[in-house]
Amino acid sequence: MSDCIFCKIVAGDIPATKVYEDDDFVAFHDIRPIAPVHVLIIPKAHVDSLAHCEPEHQAMLGRMLLLAPKIAAEQGMTDGFKCGINTGRAGGQEVPHLHLHVFGHKA
Ligand code: 5GP
Ligand code: ZN
Image 1 (cartoon, rainbow, N blue to C red):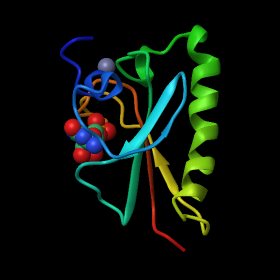
Image 2 (image 1 turned 120 degrees about the vertical axis):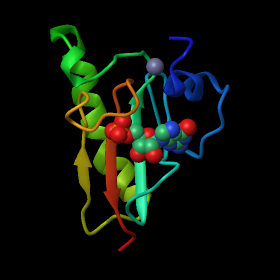
Image 3 (image 1 turned 90 degrees about the vertical axis):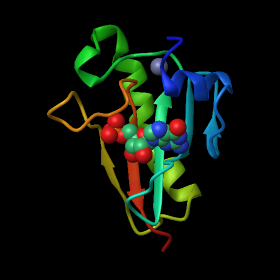
């Protein structure tokens, strides 16, 4: 989506401090971190939110979740971490492109 800030990060049109990238996902540091380490994992293919996911997104959602412990470990969060997916207005979602927050601190 041309007006989506996270699609622009995927396209390289907006800079981000990337910590991981593969064919389907990119992960980068949140611009306004609320934890010592705060990473966002996003699918490259635009999906508005978790509430917009369909059965066809099942594999993508599973792969996105499985990236969390991998990236958390790579970022030094070896003691544990928190994950969150804000969804919709009442869920506190500001950016309408599905993203998984990973919060923690270096052990
Ligand atoms: P939400 O509230 O939608 O779950 O979280 C969106 C997150 O994206 C927020 O934590 C916000 O700080 C982060 N964010 C918004 N715009 C940008 C940006 O341009 N670059 C980066 N790295 N993070 C962003
Ligand atoms: Zn998008």
